[in-house]
Image (tube, rainbow, N blue to C red):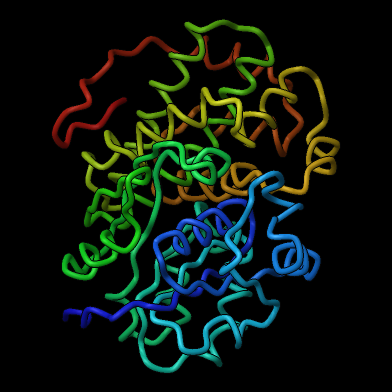
Length: 349
């Protein structure tokens, strides 16, 4: 089944956090009509009256043509494309509210990174469950190394758009791509989402490494062994191993494990410095997806019997009160192993 290529003039961006607002700004600059839905009424007012999302993207001037609304019905009326950019834990309730206003199938771009905590489902799987079956081939995933703070200032970024329908994905590529926003296409929807979600868990771990001042060698080791864990789980879930060497795997992993703009790295950094998770989360309005994703990743690892010692260590630190220094000591004391080359279908140990 092939989804007819839509004539896209109006786009609905659902979710006005930093990333959703950035994508809405980008699409308006592509000379498209964009309606941005925000859960917070103060965000709607800030965008419409001040031309700025003062809560989630302060200091970035937004185009006058960008309008925000608190009404989901208004947001999707007459639209040709829906971009979902809500936090992963909000995807199901928001989609349930949105469903009554959806009729004929539309292409959907999932721009949220995460795994649902209770069901352990990826975002595309949540959509597959809640939407009629004839919507499935129109679902694509936008992911990769892309800090909103940089993209919103038109700094160069490359990103992956993955979908089952190659024709639709190529069409949407032209919608999103610009001189500063380079879009590559792919077909591995599962791998693209797993890479984008699990890198947040590894970013927390990398933050702990930096918070404990363990050095650059330790951070490089964390990134490398973290990639091995992502590959193991991804292959167990049916993803293409090659996806994880690309933008949504290694690219996003390097960015979030080393970039000062990473919310998840910032959480890990403060944990490594001795702060309590509850205190850290209470002080920020933005969402650190890696905290919730750690629970879901641990659930998937157990279900598919995949060894993920870094994820297990982060889980023990976040939810079982295990000290960061003890987690590092336990990881270093694991039994000696050989390193299997990351090639073909061979799985890293």
